[in-house]
Image 1 (cartoon, rainbow, N blue to C red):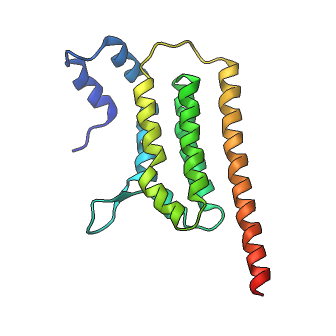
Image 2 (image 1 turned 90 degrees about the vertical axis):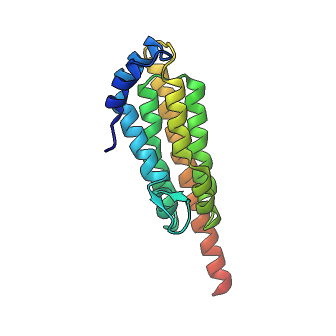
Length: 180
């Protein structure tokens, strides 16, 4: 039987090497951690390719949809970034997480090769690892500036993906004209 995050917190309390601050923080944000882990698993490692130990998720599968697949997968993966902002991670960590999403989306837009990259890179798993690593540090509460920063990052990511989709559509149209 799999145990959820809250059950694991109870087990951790009895561990001598766990700091009190770590346990308090993990308990306070356990729902966000569970959602983030679920999304990362769904997008990056839900299925095992038969006959191999390679795990893939919906990210490279949805990425096979021309033009919009990678944008959809990246936008769903951005939920982990929002959860990280709610957990008040430092801005530099939010930048790293955003870069993971952007890199996966940009390279993922390349047909077939981009999907192979998504299988290897697993940006959402990387972002959950960052979330877990940095969520336990002392920090101040989120300010309006923090939210403007994160919303600006998300809008930037959307802008990059829309640009990539427009570029791909333009390229396909030019190739179609040449072939026609």
